[in-house]
Length: 137
Image (cartoon, rainbow, N blue to C red; front, side, top):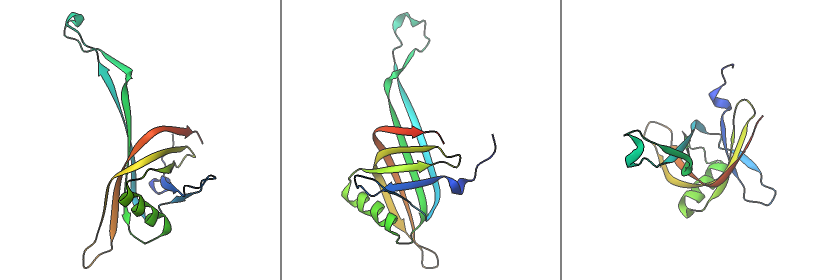
């Protein structure tokens, strides 16, 4: 498989309309996705000390992180508004190979900052709420 450009891995936020339009958070410098499968441990006394797990009985979590430069674009303002309200929004991850993942996320952490001799930055951590849809490119 050929290497893919990180700048082509885009996080987009939905506008909440019935025919949803997604806009890239274009000032992002880094995006990341993490899936965590938490299996259920069903190890018992008769397991001879060997752990036994049930993978599909546990909870799967998905976390997105984004860091970037704040440019006061419409998508960044929607992200900020969702952070203050705590409301879920639909997000889309567009992967460089054409794959797309869509799901509802809630912002767990949001920050903005800057230095006197630098640019204003932002970062956010989002947690998936509900199922996601994955489409191969």
